[in-house]
Image 1 (tube, helix red, strand yellow):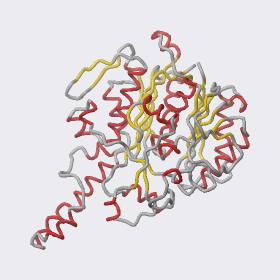
Image 2 (image 1 turned 90 degrees about the vertical axis):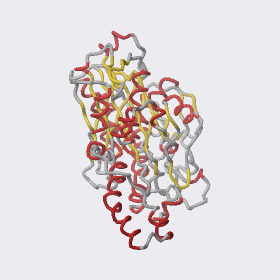
Image 3 (image 1 turned 135 degrees about the horizontal axis):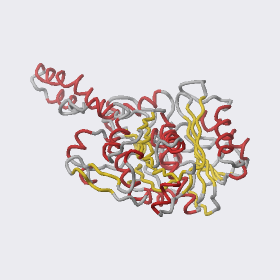
Image 4 (image 1 turned 30 degrees about the vertical axis):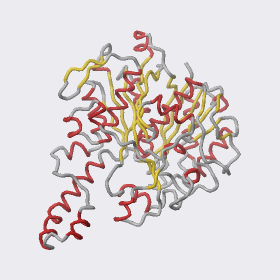
Length: 447
């Protein structure tokens, strides 16, 4: 059964909207800043830069007060990209509840409309905000009382930022299935709902599962993607990766163009991103025929493998990554020489880039163009695979590739795209690898 990508939506550090993001990517734009100065009040960071999301006011993005109160920002981002993707796929969305901002997707059977959404950590921001209140709220009041409201102590305590009250929606905001479930509720779907939690491969694996739902006959249409939002007031999430030694070691004051260098000899860790969201509308051929909408690309094959090696790093031998790439190409009834472009995982870590480049060299040599979307956005975790799949689909549509930045001394003799490039893009491989050893990949083809 053939499956097509008929709509896309995206939110990233570069802004809101798939087309807006795509044009900025083609131009090689980034959004890299020093981390907030007050984060140093809590820890001595060794990584000093990040890629923040824009400062969203969700009330100005057509979310209701109820939604903003009841949903974590990661869920709101997922809803934002999903709405754009449905509109982009030319579906008629009928609002059936103004209070809950709930819609019905017309011209489709709601019982055959599925969801597959990935996230690495779910509503982690909501957890941190509420646990901060739980741990420090009463202590702060008592310390102020005992110090007779000493102004210096009060100033120090005010650096502790947390929720003003403990939200009754904390559990529903935090649990990782909420992003998929809330998307299903918002669009009144009654088909299967899949929630994927596979760290950095979550977004790609969600697309794999959406494809499988259509292939199995369980759904005709699937809203598939990934979302993440790490915007905690203390930088605690970033510090977790910092302590693990995974982040870029660029010193404060370093030139921005030296901070994030996937596949470069001088790479020293990935650029932390606050997150984002990507959504793709997957549609069966039979369902698409009734709508007369031109798809962006065909989703020709999908696959997963597992390293069974380490929680933190890929298997240096890369056997299961190699099996993933070769098998998903074969499942698409293609040969490696048919792949024009690979949107790599390309994190800029020592271990990942080494293993990935060696396998790509072995399979493709210089026959496929390669780039890293993370060189532009940083690592958006559970969102990255979905965002990179969108980039792959748009590359097919426009027959154009975005540059992979800061690549001065490549670690392998491969066809890395270092400038905006027009070229033939008929078939694309996009893949993701994750903490734990999860590997997932998809093949997209020109229609």
